[in-house]
Amino acid sequence: MSTRDTQRRVSVTTEGGIATVALDSPHNRNALSGLLVEQLREALEAAAADESVRAVVLTHTGGTFCAGADLSEASAAPQDDPARARADELVDLLRLIVTVPKPVVGVIDGHVRAGGMGLVAACDIVLAGPSSTFALTESRLGLAASVISLTVLPPDRSARGVADLPHRREVRCGRSGPHRAGHPSPAGPERGPGPS
Image (cartoon, rainbow, N blue to C red; front, side):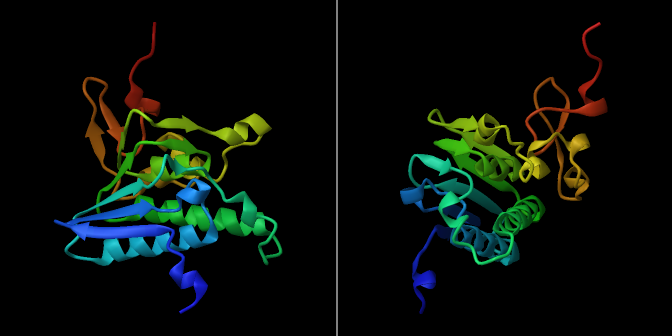
């Protein structure tokens, strides 16, 4: 068994038809390291394939849900273009969360930063506790949150067509009308007339 196999960054429990998948790397604020992304992908694929699982809860240990990319790995990566490789891995992970054929419920009570916002936005429903804070920290550096725009942008503005995926369902949110699950506010024609 390799060291990589013994370094758990994601914990999984299944009980009563619910698979609870927890980001479990509090020592680095659950940063999206290569190992964490790989283990999260494996856990989500296993939950999707398990017929006894009816829903997935995505949560965390420690005071931070996810701090975004693990910048300590950026210079150590063996790829010719490590930033591109990491972006591709994250896009694949976000696409997986969006396409899991079971409800994915985010349960968060901590800080959510950068790429962590993409994980949250990919969930069908999110419950955020009183300690939750959210930020696209890359904007302070003049950078766009381009990789996570797959899930963060409103449905009709998503360049990848996530809103058109068959499992995304419309839900009613009080009086505000139909929304796409996973998106906090309506967009486009669903919004209705604006102020006159």
